[in-house]
Image 1 (cartoon, rainbow, N blue to C red):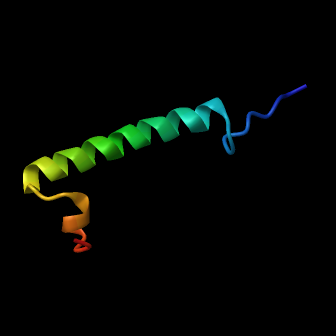
Image 2: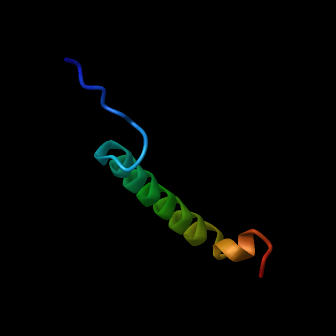
Length: 47
């Protein structure tokens, strides 16, 4: 019998990629702040 591995929901596969993308987004946000000298809220015009 075949077992179908789902790729949606709270699976190890989904959570691993979610963590990787969150770390990437944080690193890009930090690098952008260092390059521009402004925080994210200032860049968006909210402050």
